[in-house]
Image (cartoon, rainbow, N blue to C red; front, top):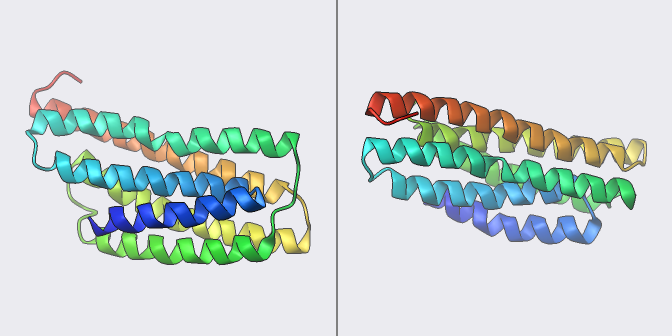
Length: 186
């Protein structure tokens, strides 16, 4: 529950800053915060369900995990059509805040990361990927200071999308294993 609350709260912060400075990376990451809040709430509900229902939820979560990737593509296309270098100070500060929130979430979830179920695996992959994305956001802000261009921001935003696509595939595969183990149709 704490992971869901942290993610939902920081979504508003990061989305507001991302939109105000037109940062693809921050917008993609903020949508990821919203997705993580949703995933963790769904997981809390799903853990009380039968094995077949949990396996189906794991499959649905794989689709939810793709949403930030789609948001990153939309924001990247907009940024390419309307280039503007994001404000690096705001990008760095927001990335550092996101790194703190995601590190706390990863720490909370680290105690269950080896649990053998797609729902738990989804939460752990999301938290781990978010920490990596935040480090990349901070690096992109630094690179933008050295070489002011929109491409650092776009590259990191699309990279966040790729991380999410990879996590979605892993969760989907794990949900198929769970479905077979529960006797549900894959």
